[in-house]
Each structure stands twice: as C-alpha cells, then as structure tokens.
Length: 144
Image (cartoon, rainbow, N blue to C red):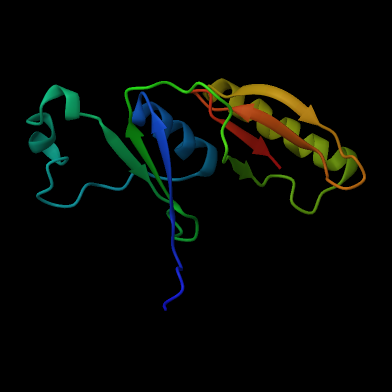
C-alpha cells in the first residue's frame, strides 16, 4: 500500500472567500487560478446558479510545502468547539519571554485581519506558552 504524502485541510464555513483570504494573509498562502475551462473561471463562474457562486475556494502554499486549504460553504453555523485546529508555529524554538513576545507580535498582526484573541496559555513545565485565537468565522487556532 502506498503511503499518503499530501493532504488537504477543509473548512466548513459560511463565507469561503472571506475565510480563505484571512488564512492566505495569516500563512502567506495564495488563491490559485482556476483550471482553464472550469466552471469557476471568468464568465463561466458567473453563469453558475447564485447558490453555487462562491460556494468554495482553495488556497495553497506558494512554496508547495504546506497543505492545501479548502473552504466550502455549508448551511449550518459553527455551534461547538473545534475538534481539530491549526497551530500557527510562530514561536518554534523560543522559550520564556522571547516566546511570549513572538506570540504577542503575531497576535497584534492578526487582530486587524479579523482574528480574535481568546486566551494565553502560559508555559506549565510540560508545554510552552501558546495563544488561543479565533479566525473570522470563530474557528479556533493557536499561535504556538
């Protein structure tokens, strides 16, 4: 059996473009152009029924290293805590006040983009500090 080498992270959301653009800004990702001739490209995308326009959007790591993120519109809203979340690794290798400063600096960059600070989890002797946040639709993620 072949080993899986790539994966995609899919977000259910109300506004795929808004959430995708947020994560592009957070991670330095880009929205790739649609494949030539696809229903999403140019005038063909506008020819889709209104309920299908903007129903999904992907973003990718321009270096090709990180996973593809896919955002799809769903009718229901978020009602409980995520069972899975992204850790944005901004403090890797840092400890103590230096790590806290890196987390706080990234938080300050993300809040104007629409992120919400939830709480700081301080180092406890086992885990280093991390900062819990929410994206533009309330999905939890951590600055780690």
